Length: 291
Image (cartoon, rainbow, N blue to C red):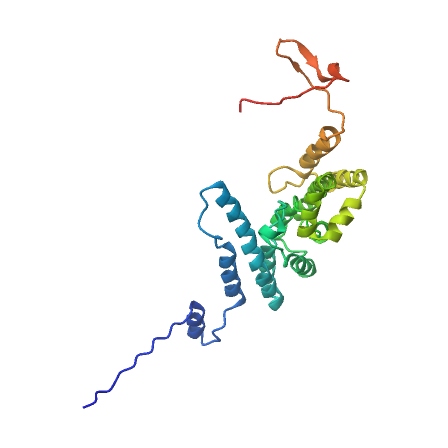
């Protein structure tokens, strides 16, 4: 006698499907759910935590490559749902990794999402009140997209603190970029590395720029920040005027080729002296502290 065979089917539904089924809706994930999934992927460590210096370097390189690979997915999400608040959050995450360190491109990969991400941020979100942290991070980056973005935020954002942050960050960005370009002029191999990372035309154009003119522009932007936003407290605690004053002193007195400000003190024998007493001589200044 044949016995009937009982077949049991077990269906596994995702959390999205359970939630949607309970609402009697489509099981497709919402834009917010898709973003959270991508954020989880973006934040995933690139491997086991490193223990040696060699492992740490490889870990950093793998992290850059991993986030560069996730960034285009975030931009695609923003393009699919341009009117959803998730679009702004996806774009901000796509450009979170700022290129402040010129790693060789073969080790970290190309950032293929950056240009489009900034294009969309400028088009749709330049007035957002969430741009302050991004403006701060861009201060020491190098990419071609950073300067026009900071200028646009400084001009168009309705929040005065964000405009101040963007203006100060623009001055820092122009100054840091000038320093890197000077290194590229002195080291041809470094210039090739920068060209591979940031684009040959962009780097070539920057290297043609007159250094003195560029330095004057940096000073002008800091002066603008002090004049327009002097009383605004920046996210790190300084006012725009305090930050600008300190940076302008550095630019005008402490850079290579500038005349150092006169310093007074006591030498190792207890005699008072002024730095100007040694004008025309080679002097080594060693600043140190117990702290």
